[in-house]
Amino acid sequence: MIKYINVKSKTRNEFIDITDMVQDVVKESGIVKGVCCLFVPHTTAGITINEGADPSVQRDIVQALSRLVPHDANYFHREGNADAHIKSTLVGTSVQVIVEDGKLVLGTWQAIFFCEFDGPRHRRVAVTFLR
Ligand code: ZN
Image (tube, rainbow, N blue to C red; front, side, top):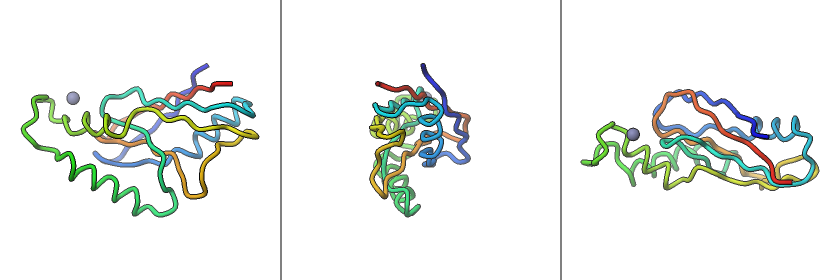
């Protein structure tokens, strides 16, 4: 069983907290104990787990990635989004979260972020479980 979470980004580079949506999928699945696998089927987006309490952290990560990988840098890929492809590979396109007692096991300050690097777009995140 694969469920999809739909995400709509509003800007070119953006982190979107999807923790509550993932927890809803866990609840709907009825799974009590196992592993939640999240996968982003896109080449210019990613997924990561980091601090959700202070939005400055997300902004700092977005800015740091843009310093590391500038939008224009004489890339071979001429579609105009080479930076987004590189950021996707740096961040990665999957994470796994342990599920215990029907809840995602996350640290107090942790949240799951969909990472947009070539928005605004309609995106999706695939969710499945290992039991
Ligand atoms: Zn491209």
